Length: 192
Image (tube, rainbow, N blue to C red; front, side, top):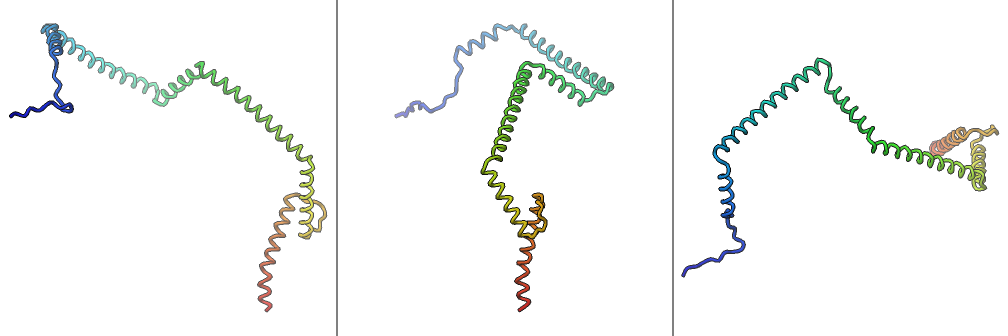
């Protein structure tokens, strides 16, 4: 008994050209005669030669251009600057740039006005607060504290000093009291 294996769906089989494809290739080969093939080959060789010649001519022209630029003192940096200036000029003259510039200018003017309004509103509010009873009460408390600090420090001068003078004298008094407090226990020990 002969085992015949059935083709499995997952088996891979090499692709084979169909008769139609082979026929189309044969017809195309028959359409171009040997004489036409030779003409096409000659034309191809001519075109390749022309391309090589054009590349050589272009290289020679580029070399000549570089020599002239060198004699004129035109450097790569100058060329880049000129190209950048030309490009920037093109951007600036474009209508989209002009519209954007106008829009940003108007937005800047509006933002400046808004900031001014906010600043004046804050100034007005602070002015109103200064005249409020709460602020006056706070101001009186600060004055009383300053006066009591001056009295504690032993200021003999009854004229009111500047804020900096009050801070300085308070700091000085605080330093003296802490220094005296740290020296007193040592003095007690020495006496015993």
